[in-house]
Length: 255
Image (tube, rainbow, N blue to C red; front, top):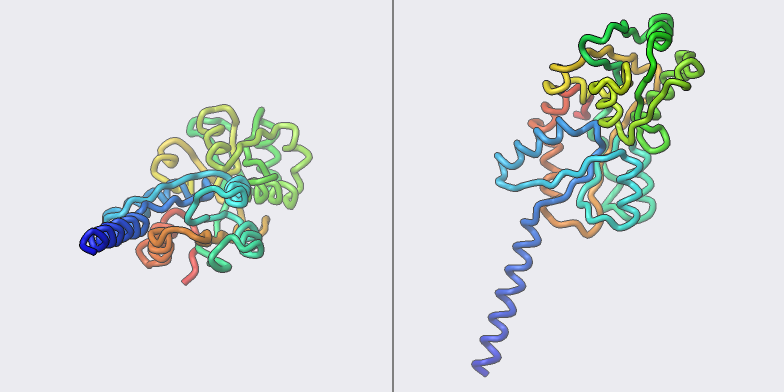
């Protein structure tokens, strides 16, 4: 009888330890690449405020969406296109329909010292395209910012001129790096990246009117069966302090 009590006590202690460890496990957040600088700052604030680490995985929204469908162990997906979250919800892979966390903007971006004059209007852009050898955008097949770039070029009427010179990044961060390293004369990048001190020190940018592409409605959702720590970070992202960071990086955020 005494032995049985010891065994039960040991089992209860073990399960309590496992439960606490699971609850405190650092959540893995899969996030669109346009969030890199903003989300790293928010994660640092979360560590300072809550004493909890967050694992960040960045990529194009389409690739991350596919990884979730394939069973990747993410706790939270922050997509740059709400459609990916909507699809996961319809397929029963998220806790709920998720929430809109930001609306993004796109910019023309070039490395400082580049002699090509950038302008977001048609005449100015045609001149920039003619002077450029390579123009970088994210791959529109799976990157929302690449789709917005393509829509902009189509809507302004310069797609045919630009297409032969396009080089595609796997995500918006890579497309931006093409411009910063000189592999492209300029890129159509994310305002959130261009607003970071790291990139402002290296590049110039011109804001593209948001009337020239569909709104970049960015949505996030918790993945089913995730650890409680992912839910904690999800709600932290919706707090005013986190929204202030997002706004500083050029996002429009819901109230």
